[in-house]
Image (cartoon, rainbow, N blue to C red):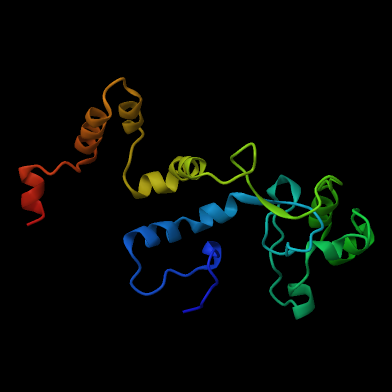
Length: 186
């Protein structure tokens, strides 16, 4: 198992015999990863390949046969030294026209000095569990995987005490431990 330093959730592995909570968190990490983009500062912390730093969420895939120098290339290598402008000549030499156009079309703001990850679904760019949860629920694959239909949202919006809402939700989802459910569990 590859060891990672604390706080590197996106690079973590599920490990041996993970708990239900960790397995659930690990299963959605690709959704979380794809929901971040980079705010470009100096580009020193952002790898060119497989990261969302270009405008319009364009991602440059890592080429198959790439040397180690190219693999370690950062966005700062695509900027003119000591200025915040794209080195367009080098960009059009290194990349195909489509990717080069996307790179050169990505704005560079002088007010942003340091690279920072930005959460796409909040105006301030700060990650929140609420917006991540909404993103995951809105994905059809998760909804279909768990067999949920969207009628349960009406239960949570109705004007009733929380315990009644919870009871109705458990009934509609089949979580209520009735005699039949208890017998099915043995």
